[in-house]
Image (cartoon, rainbow, N blue to C red; front, side, top):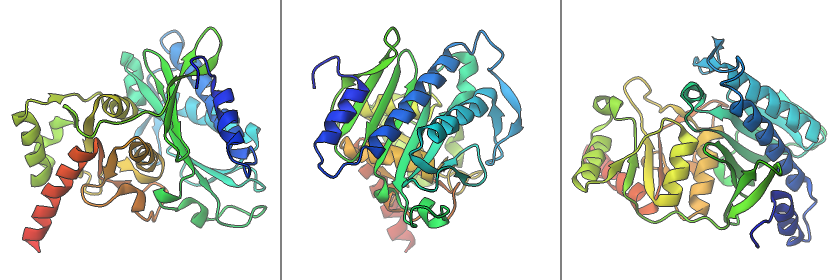
Length: 329
């Protein structure tokens, strides 16, 4: 693709490569991009208007909502509803399914604004989205089975990173493509085609403040990283940490802790999407042992330990965890 290719043009070219394509998924991706532009506008003026800081209530996870969490959820829901290609949404900010157009075939799982607590200090934040094709008949109400699908069933996934520049990165299972928002044009322009994650890197990302609550295997891996004089880099914004590690090579870990024995990150709208992107770029993602994309979800807001990044580094964590399991067995 030539430099200067817009997201719309790129999507259209990819659509034309498949004779059976209906254009519905293409339109849905455009709807998500539009919502991303709107959120980017809100983020950029958060220091000027009273939209930063806490909202004063908690979401379904029991976490304090930020004002921009609420705004982002409203903006994305409205964009997907008006776009007319989405039958239902599962959002971090909503307890139950948000039902939209029953005559559509696509379900969107999303974290409208990941890392939003960082907005007050002007640190990168992001949106994560995952798209599934419904299982139940089109025209009827969306069922739980339409939502509770393993990550292998995703037909598209991506994220929007609001940082020094705003990027939209997505995959439909045919490589990972990155687009940067050109502010003067208001268009996402292709900036990184066929993105690849190095098989090994020099960065490890983990909240070491929880070190003594980690399992023996995770602590052993952290010590290995230090012995190799690797760089510890942890932003506290999942999208930003993942994006850096995918480009430069590295590993991100959010393991189980004493306070969160099932992990903290959500399977459906955080881990599955990024795992799909990681694998498409040559990386890997597990819960420490099992492949993330093969986990069968049992609830909308299910949590899981998360290890993602350069393939050889993720495999090393798996080796350490497997050794302990063998000894215990």
